[in-house]
Length: 202
Image 1: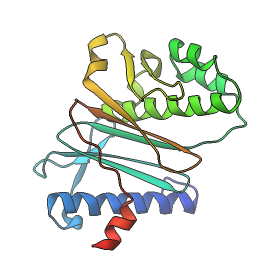
Image 2 (image 1 turned 180 degrees about the vertical axis):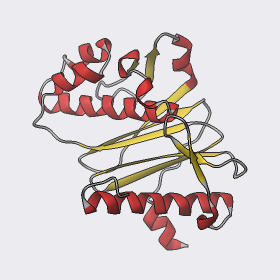
Image 3 (image 1 turned 180 degrees about the horizontal axis):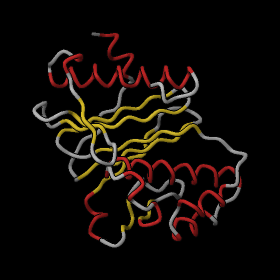
Image 4 (image 1 turned 90 degrees about the vertical axis):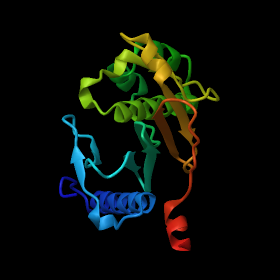
């Protein structure tokens, strides 16, 4: 928490990690304070060995904190508050694949901003699910970004079969935000709820 400069960011981090402990504790039927965490070599946190097969990921932006929990499969989530007033094409040139840049160039105005954030959150969710950090080049895979097109991983390089291992979902969080979920494997069911409301009921 101390890594964050501003109190708002520190508070958001603390709330997110506290909710994560509560939710994991409920799933595992253990006292949240008893949970132990470790990190991979790339820095992705996970439950210490012997505490079950749940995997998780956390993302926060603005006033929203999103937590994804999956049983026995990798999961990544990303939420971003939508801002304009920056050079979309310049940012895309540094982080998007050639195919994604080409698709983005077909839009203008607000539609371009929306497409940019759809692409960004989907790429971030996938990178976080893989848990490889900056060692996974962002231009080595393509995600969908056209308005109305389902969130999905279109292509992966150098291994094209990798794309079939993942399923994506766009998340409707709140006005002014974009969010995406990436989950390993097929055949899973997504349940989405407001954690504070759910916790208050119990």
